[in-house]
Length: 176
Image (cartoon, one colour):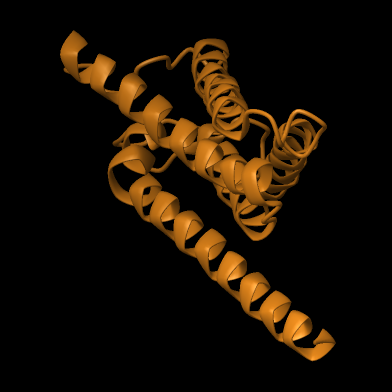
């Protein structure tokens, strides 16, 4: 069908499995680092660096898959400015979603945004591992889905933190 992306790994099932495995590996490695001993000293710095690394891995994977598949830039009429917008926008969004999630983990020990990050990362890997089509998945994700995911991860972290604080206050009230 014209305009439909093709899975690089040959099937949607193989692409889905690979996407989940890549997401778990990249997210678990970053989460392990964010929850480490450096957490208490510089959580903002830790989250920022891990977010940039996470974003670089995803955008690097996007570029690698497209280069190997021979479809680095799928829109033949795109101007260099549009290409730069796709790359920078994609990098910004995937970096922000990782930095937000890992920031909650590093600063407060809040884990639910990291679980959400794993799911969002699996989606991004799934989109990356499909080439062709009428639009670029990185640009589409950055414009349409990514900002919603960043907001959802912020909200998820705030909700977990609020519940934890409420439970701690109830527990502390019972001790007095």
